[in-house]
Amino acid sequence: MDPADLGSYLSTRRARVRPADVGLPEGPRRRVPGLRRDEVARLAGTSVEYYTELEQGKATHPSPQVLAALARALRLDGDERDHLFHLAGLAPPSSGGSGHVQPAMLTLLDRLGTTPARVITDLDVTLAQNPMAEALLGDAGPRTWPAASFVYRWFTDPAARGLYPAEDHLRHSRESVADLRAAVARRGRDDEAEDLVERLHAASDEFAALWASGDVAVRRSVRKRIVHPTLGVLELDCQRLVSDDGRQRLLFFTAPPGSAAVGQLELLSVVGRQDLGTPSGA
Image 1 (spheres, rainbow, N blue to C red):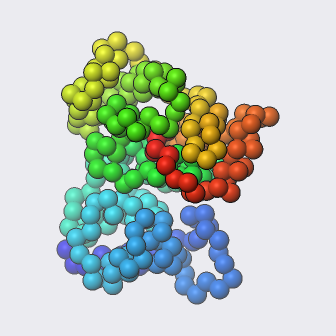
Image 2: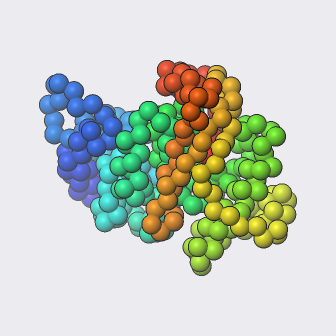
């Protein structure tokens, strides 16, 4: 690994990304092409100081999580993402799609600034989300495997269920297991999916019983009730757009016309991330 090469590559990638590409205003006094360092750091969820050290070749051995976040922030395609990992002396993630948001999904996400939206994998790992989704659903991470999967947290961490009213929990459990079964079958022989199912069997009797039922159903558009610490319960329609390979999904939440949720979503854009406490999920 040559930190200078890594830093130079980050700098050239940053220079080519327009603020509008990532949902940021151009501003009247922009003195550099592309994004500023602080903007990349904010998009990637790292400190400005650390990102500056990476570009200057002073920081070594960035983690895979940091590299994946930088690849998303800089809108790298698969080949560019792999090159970033190689420069850092790490093996790129598998092409299965668990760490790198497909460019088309990011493009759509960037254009949903007033609608809660996030990109997840078919194993329910959040890859990216917009500020409205963070305000509605909470901070998405980063988390290490297997806790990165909301399905795993749902069956192993009682706090994860606080996102939904208690009377809806059984329905969400059934839907989660049925959807996971469909994803596992679609993936075929896949180490990540098989590992998740094995861990869930070991950790949750509820999961094991639901898995044994053999039910299978792909989640599509559904009505959800979401508990927000300030706004109370929001009843929203959750729409899903699925990538061609089925491994990534863009979720976005809309209020039924004429419902109380219309005003609640408008207020959410004002409340933002105040009064945090919402568990992260979808």
